[in-house]
Image 1 (cartoon, helix red, strand yellow):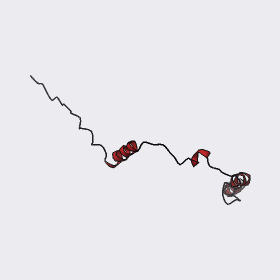
Image 2 (cartoon, helix red, strand yellow):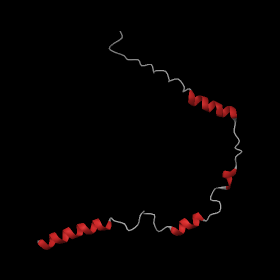
Image 3 (cartoon, rainbow, N blue to C red):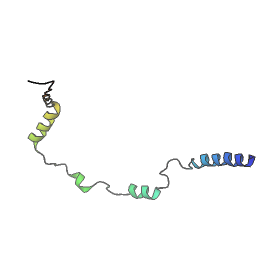
Image 4 (cartoon, rainbow, N blue to C red):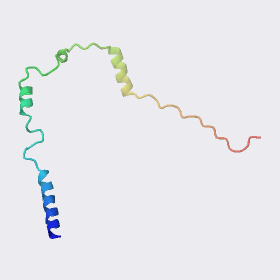
Length: 87
């Protein structure tokens, strides 16, 4: 019986030991990936350099106006309740 208790106590310690890591972060060990990203000449998409974005000013102003002034709430639904006989 004592042997079972000792084995149970030791297995509990082993489980706690396995939860500890020897590294600072879980991403440690990705040095090859980090170095390749570090040495990339231009990591951005070439289309990101386009600063002349076409757009309609009147449409954009209308969208901004709708955000500033919210539309009025919808009207309350009309509810008819029939109570009793209408003779």
